[in-house]
Image: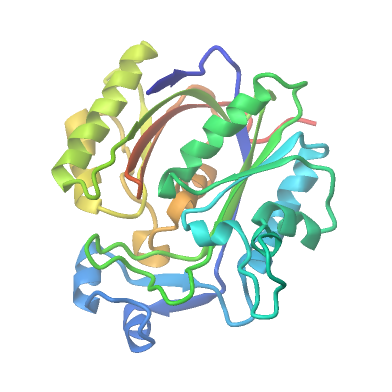
Length: 321
């Protein structure tokens, strides 16, 4: 699926992120039985630390500051769109004393988040089925909302805390994760990054080989560039990959032969894989205030999904008031 948005004038800005308050190294994670892989296996991939929710921290305390920041910048947002890499975070679990019936299971994250900061009357939507491709899912959903609206921005957020009883890593994939919340605004104001297009792929297969991820990602990028009439060899571009599968993304970078310094990975050793927040973090760090540079965001998520998004850097990282 290819979506061409270069004529629609959609822009994203206001990137914000907060990581869990408790920092651990691999040995500490192993001692606390929070990883299922061996320390050496994760270390060989480049992981050293992660950030998890502190004992006094939960999904809402982690998300409150980023949401308040976005709410202040948006002034009068038209909607709040939330995404979770773990489906369990989409709604609060009912406690043991909850009354029978289905209503205790409908304590949805966006509503509880707005309640925590005394916000009200903001339409909200939520999703979780696209895993760590949530950044691209948020853009697709928010783009649909802003295309037919008066121009007020949409607040986009992704937030995840490790579900109870699970580990911070995946045994087969050897991916180390971090508890985090991030967000951005999407609207018609010309600043930050212009959204040019999206290429998205899903498969019903329960697993996909690493080489298939490489080939599919390269094809997604090349097909989207062709549809947008962008010459990758002639454009300076920054590649944004999730902090997982470092060997795969290195191969993708080599195949594309994009000039400059594409920056395949960022902060893998320190903050591990921040789920759907990885591109929000890197986009906030790489904007240099000059219009024209191309940014290519690649996402991989359980489901299984692959997504690619092309963004064009604008002169101003934030609106000029």
